[in-house]
Amino acid sequence: MRRFVLLVHRVPSNGAFTLNDLAGGAGRMDEVARAVSTAFTVSNDLRRDTQAILLFAGSGPSAAGRRITVSGARVRYLNPDERSTAALLKNALVRAADFPREFESSPGIVAGPIDVGQELRRLAMEPGGVWLTEGGTLWRSRPPVGPPTTFFLSDPYEPTEAEQAILVAAGLPTVSLGPRSLRTSQVIDLVHHELDLAEAGAA
Ligand SMILES: C[S@@+](CC[C@H](N)C(=O)[O-])C[C@H]1O[C@@H](n2cnc3c(N)ncnc32)[C@H](O)[C@@H]1O
Image (tube, rainbow, N blue to C red; front, side, top):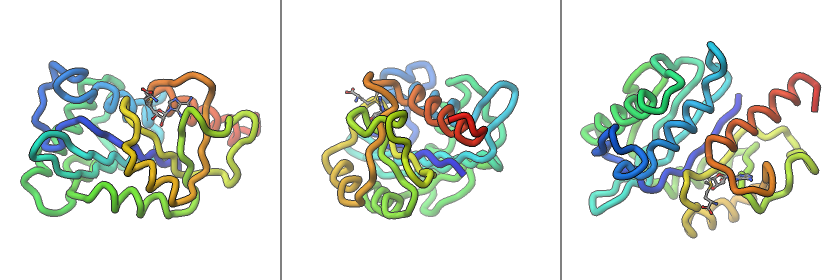
C-alpha cells in the first residue's frame, strides 16, 4: 500500500468554491485535484494499491478541519482531469459540512470532521512515514529504508509551523526528490516512479 498524506491549507473546507476558479478563490484546489488524480491514475487504469488522505485545515472565519480519504481499491468516477476530480472532492466537502461523522460520499471517497493537528500527529506516529521536502536527504543518494509506505507532503503552501513541529516531533525522516522545489503533483509522480522501479527490481 502506498499512502500520501496531503496537507491542504486554503481550500474552503465547507466546499464553498466554484469549479470555475479552482486556482483562485478555491485556494489552489486545482493543484490538490491534480495531486489526487496523479496519485491514482495511470494510462487507462487506476493504482489500486494507493490511498490519499487529504487533511483540510480550512480557511476563513468558519474554518473547520476535514479529512477526505480516497482509496484506490474502491474508488469510482475518478477521471484524470482536474475539474471532475475537484468536483468529487467538493461534493464530499459540501456534504461533510452538514454531517457530524465520517461517511462515504461516493465509492472509495470518505469524508468527515477532524482536528488537523491531532490527525496529523496520529498519522505521523505510525511506522513507515517519511516527510517529502526539498531540504531532505536525496532519495537517489540514500533511498529511504523500509521501504516507506506513507508520504507526507504539502499543497502549494508550506506546512505551517505547527504542522512542521508535529512532523519533527514524530521523528519522520525527510526525503527530497531533487534540488528543485516541485509541484505537489510532480512529487507524487516521482514517488510512484521510484517505487515502481524498486518493485520492478530496477532501482
Ligand atoms: C509546491 S511545494 C510547496 C511550496 C514551496 N516549498 C514554496 O516554497 O513555495 C509542494 C510540496 O511538495 C513537496 N516538495 C516540493 N519539492 C520537493 C522536492 N524536491 N523533494 C521532495 N518534496 C518536495 C513538499 O512537501 C512541498 O511542501
